[in-house]
Length: 170
Image (cartoon, rainbow, N blue to C red; front, side, top):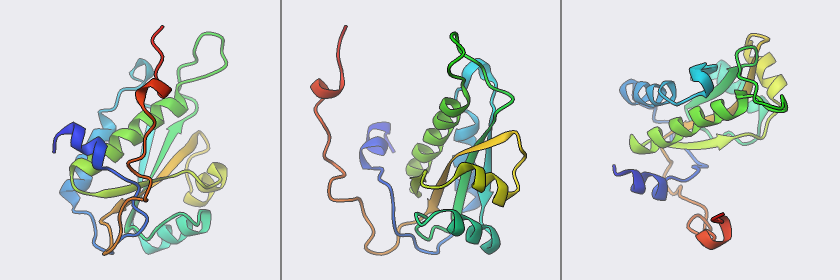
């Protein structure tokens, strides 16, 4: 699919069938995350693939915003392996994990796989319940699968502000 079509047509799916994502497509999606750029190429991301009924039930405990996808990705980053920017107010952890997650979402769309970025959860509780190492922080979780019959974008999906309201040339 052409990139412009991927970004135009991709939407946050909120109703999934139980059809599992094929391993070849899942690997391609995960590879896109692996190739995402990170500050100083630290590659501090860690992606957890959640497919077992037991771990999906844990995700259901964490958020009401899992919409039945048969696969969930949890994108985390190593808090001890980040680049601290000048001024020492920010580091690369959240932004690098966000870039990785965005690559995953766009790669999924390119593969014909639907997704939904979920951030309505307590990241500390997520790390605890998923049994992640103490040095990792969960940025987001992502539903991944195929839309159920009747699913589609929200009515306001194509509503966007004009560039003149979101871009300023200095």
